Length: 405
Length: 219
Image (tube, rainbow over all chains, first blue to last red; front, side):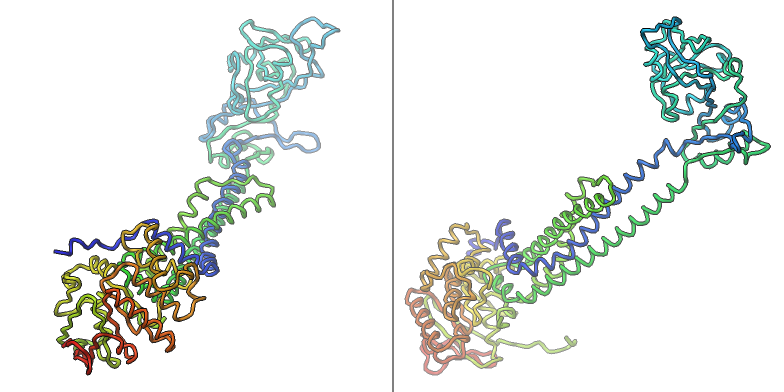
């Protein structure tokens, strides 16, 4: 009958948050101390993630794929004499090794000061002769330095004895040659070469950018080059260490120790690993502080529930249902966690900037982290509020009201 | 709890009818079952047996949610220790009474100021309870109980923490409210308080009986 006229108790969202906020602000000092644990935890997490990213960024710039696959072999020298001669067929020997993507010899040719020009006439009014370095390279060297061809083609073994040349982009600019369709010629001293290609870029051996490159066979005929000066190898990722040990044997079976093989330092990988370990340690530390923060919130919320039994009883007496009481305490602890997370994210970001300034690094932080941190704090607050909220909801109103608080 | 401990019967065959507009006091020594009666009258607990009809509604058949709502809207509580929230203003404390009912904020505010005026505290609206005297605090609590327009004002030792002069002022207010037609039910062991009621009911060992010298019967 009349029960239909009774409308169940109700607490609007705005009122719920208003009451919870008043509850938090009633003791601002305590709220600040309660949230401090979460602040520290979230700050530690944000700072760790940010610093890991920042430091990782530093390592990546030093330890990248290009450097990790770069192996160079030269002959050791003692008293100005080379101890071992690299073979002219180094390219064939090395490409047989599993893990070598490309290999080739690169040898600077002594041209006795001969200058390079693109016109046969020496015009005294215009400077058209240039002091360009001349390299004898084997065809595989272009791949080994990861050259990209801008125009024309590179030479292959069929052109080994022919007077052809490939120009680096800097050299081509100097000589004012920008395409090879007209088969332009260049002159080095008394020798004439047909330019068959112009490189666009090289990723290794930047000295090639400003140089003229000719085939090995031609260089041996014209300049009597005795042996290649260096071998450039491009390996598969992860194969550099192995190829480094095998290349010396392949190139100089009689005296591998007389060759100087430079491989990327494995130490860098070790360093990255160390950073990973440090990272894990700090994440663990952040997690532990967050846990401590959660326990702090749970503890203080529980204490405040016990302190506020009178209030809880009163709220029940004026029509509040158990769920309203539980809801209020949950929102209070969630607010504390959220505020802690917000503050912690700010502190963490400041730590990252501070460390970066001190170490002269570029601070890097995933923008999601400072956005997610307050949510993580709120989650911590929510979880740690569950038990106190249930305790609050289970308080019998009359016991609370008669307790004489 | 030890298994097999016998159930305690706090109240036995209580049969009490309070008419609308009546002013009834319940007296009795500690342990006589007053608390339990208050629990049931205040809809804070449910009797294991029997019925409690409030305003024509059989509350024993209601679910928890509706009992909460009924308690919030039809019963105004006044406690010995006031139970005001210390960090909120007098006005906020009175407004709290309507928090769990579907009353808009502006309406809550308007009615709360009205109730505070009614108990003579119109000039203390924004004061914190900690700065108010005991009598003023109890007036705020009474305003809080009145503001929902309850069917019954339920007092639990409402003057227990007050000196005699202040007690007199509060009892004066109760008399006025009674004269306005409000139903009052006051649990007390203070004769000064119980003597002001129209009718006094004595509670002893969980059994109700009419107190000597009172008008109507309650047994």
